[in-house]
Length: 315
Image (tube, rainbow, N blue to C red; front, side, top):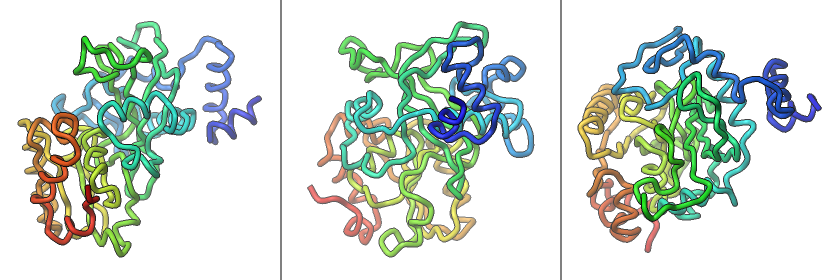
């Protein structure tokens, strides 16, 4: 059984295989190998390659699960992502479609998976509750998984009495991060594509997964990254060969600060930075409220003319 678990989950460490076997058999133990570390580290601190890095509360993801060091946090994140299943045909795909994301925007997406029973704890000492979840892999510039974001979903689907939820689970913090996020992102299109003939050193960076996927609905060939928060967008590591950076702004104070910080860093590195602004709070709000045609029209006038011609999907 251990060999089967190791192969199916993509695990390499025996301790991870043993943890998953214990969870599978229903023995006492933590489902995701990280809860033991939560008790001794306050929310607002994240693991980093230099030890525990204090992140101001305004910059940390709400409900993130800290760990005492980067290795433990990243191992737990990789383990959970390895346990998850491909996105097509799952509740996570349905959730994204209900957020207005088109099937074309999800084509070729490897960074998103689905877990049917991802455990959630309201507090470190609470009993774990299994909920279905969208699992997003956070990777560095070389494509190594450094963390994950979990979005717990409502298995009963869209509740018309709570339209703001749009199928998120009725939890206090339906999104939580695990691992090392600072500087890294969820990537749609690889860094290597910056050098190909089409992309030619272009990148779109935004905060939320749904925001960035909304932009993919009209520009599916352009590499994009979701930093998952305003604070992490401000500290995003920029890849070699980047010539022009589009920053998808969230229309709030934190979003404006992130744009200003990332713009300054890009310009200092000799990279052209262009801000993309939504009409409402973010580009997913625009997509759901106004539709694809209006989203496309708003973006077209903000892009460099040559990029609008090359990347905009007609419609």
